[in-house]
Length: 164
Image (cartoon, rainbow, N blue to C red; front, side, top):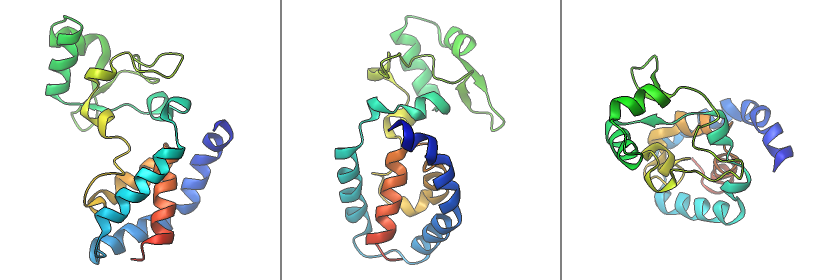
């Protein structure tokens, strides 16, 4: 996994234009049964990929925290939401709450999340490859191929099995 993670940004960059074009074509002409086919690919990839051996998303990027996430997590810590924000979050250029720093403060040395049961929605759904109408998030999916080995593998299998 370590070797693949080192190569991943380069591989994703090499395939960026091809992947972007692929998702543009999917958006224009949605193949019949796309959601089911992508779900099968997602399930197949996640039978092989163990997030606990990777955790690259938690090490390199920060999720967006919604107000609902902030309230849920601060309640978990028995903190005021404003104190949670002050201690762990910042406002980014899009005026969204994100982590002050990476790797994620809640990621343990064993790659386990200390707030897994109350983690943000963005973490629950990452890398979004099991989402219906994946063609709507092509830009995000292409971006995630440089971070997540599973996302990279899903997109590669999509291109080989689902013609746009």
